[in-house]
Image (tube, rainbow, N blue to C red):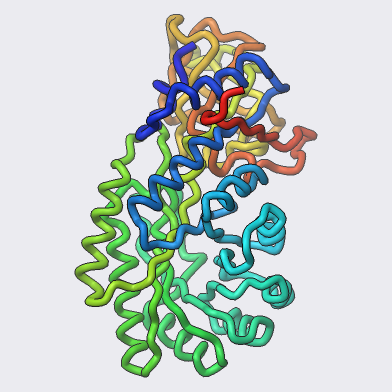
Length: 398
């Protein structure tokens, strides 16, 4: 089995040996029932520190949906992070792990009035919106709160784009923010999201340019905005090589300088970047069978679309793999999950080659699997249980 530090593609790890040994020790010694996800809190901590150092004036709001493991949230609370939440459950989780209410941004534009009221009662004062109906609910249920409006932008370059579900035009955003002021709310700024696992550092230009236009429109009507929410999109390390963090931040800085004479307050909502590379998902081979065409073997794992690998839909996210038989002769395979569902096929178009010696009971590790795996796991499709998560800390030796 190859060394984890070489396999995960994680960079900037000055204490990589300790972190590797913590994960590897867990995998080698603990051996829980598969499938399971194991997270290295040290890597989460390092990624947060890396981003906060590189973008020191930005408020970093962890997108809780990426990995809501309580210990992960608690680690980020300890680091001073803020949190982007989508539901009352995520608010409860953050508060239970010690987050201050003022550190929470209710970033979902689709929310019930009673959920807004509950968040306000808990002390949350920052809300996203993108519609007149939602804005009216915020004004009624969370009076005096700060609001920012999400604009719809081009998601080109993203492996998992958002389509047209969220956001409005810059003109509509300006109208909504002006209306927010009339309703007694504090219209603080503009947000956008250029798509998850964004591989084009220049993509943020679309959102920053749109934010500038909203700022100018509002200023012409004596409504002064002050915050730009840069959203998420910073990548993790899958089979496609992503540019380094510096390329993204350089592009963002240049766009801010060209669009704003006075630098706005910044907020950023990383999820995948903070937790993706910190996780290894261990699965077990259930069966290996010959294909009907005789060209590729089918490798069936005990993990699939419904118990952790939802992001393999359309083969959008292609994980790097490591097996217990690495080093043996390889051949082309189709990878599939364990359920009685014809759509539970993981990879059949992306070309994967795995050892020809793989048999039932062997292990296959999916690397950089810390984001959108356990959080996407179903509650029990076909009776398969949700994906459990364990945490280790590579900076603290046992």
